[in-house]
Amino acid sequence: MNLLISALAPVFVIIIFIYIKDKYEKESKRILVYTFALGAVVSVVITTILYVFFELFLPIPDDFSVWQQFVKAFFVVALIEEFSKYVIVKYYNQPRKGFNEPFDGIIYAVMVSMGFAAVENIMYVSQGGLEVALLRAFTAIPAHATFGILMGYFMGKAKFSKNRIKWNLVGLTVAILFHGVYNFFLFINFIPGVFIGAFVSLIIGIILSRNAIKTHQEDSCFKA
Image 1 (cartoon, rainbow, N blue to C red):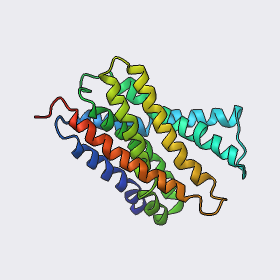
Image 2 (cartoon, rainbow, N blue to C red):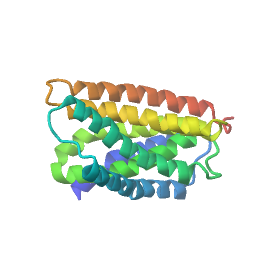
Image 3 (cartoon, helix red, strand yellow):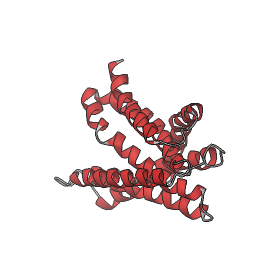
Image 4 (tube, rainbow, N blue to C red):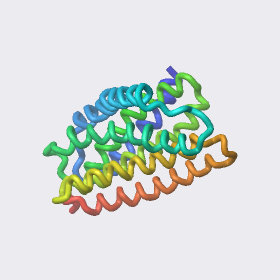
């Protein structure tokens, strides 16, 4: 039970944080729960299926090649995971009438991301224990949140733009880039000290996420 709590606690801290940041027109709690559940179930299922496909038809050796780790980080892990989240926001959340201000893109994308992160974190923490839970609470979970915020920023922009396809794809691309950079520096840990790059990318992602939140708060049509 302690491991389960330690795995889920940072996820719900971020959910509460982003819910509070939705200042002017709160989303339906029911829809937020459904979105979280879709991230935890559908997103994980899509990810698993695509991972199996790559393993069977486009396997990448897990060795000490920087190029192979680059391909794995960006074109396998980041692409698959962010695409699985994007699909839910795009086809479940974005068409809804309740998606009525740009900030909604952020909160829905974060809910999907936290659903995915919750399942992933439970798996890692159940294997690695409390030390892994503590490490991931300050690294992987915030990283997933920033990927969601950055994707959601552009998907919120897309909802109210004539160039919806363009901004949706920009959101997906930005999330993949940040996720890929973060993972790449972790995957090439056989190069001493290079893992610092993952923390640098996380810090940059957090700064950009804060700016994205502030921008869409200012853009709200419900602001007095």
